[in-house]
Image (cartoon, rainbow, N blue to C red; front, side, top):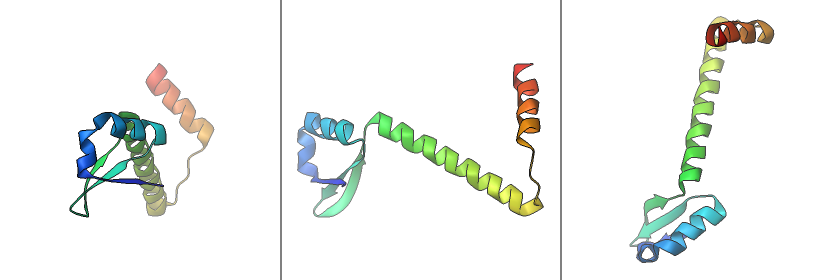
Length: 87
């Protein structure tokens, strides 16, 4: 369940840091009852970036397939990548 905290709780940065690391999800900070900030651990942020990159790659692959209806053999594709990147 997401943590929602008032902005005054930012005075105790150690507590907020512990929450972020323990729960591995963002803490939402409100100001005057409205959403204002999101605080998260670096690990959580990096995981979000990795997931986004993966989602973008999947979207691009699906769009490429929709455009030309061509599938590539996995063995051939991996062999090509090995030759290209490993010599």
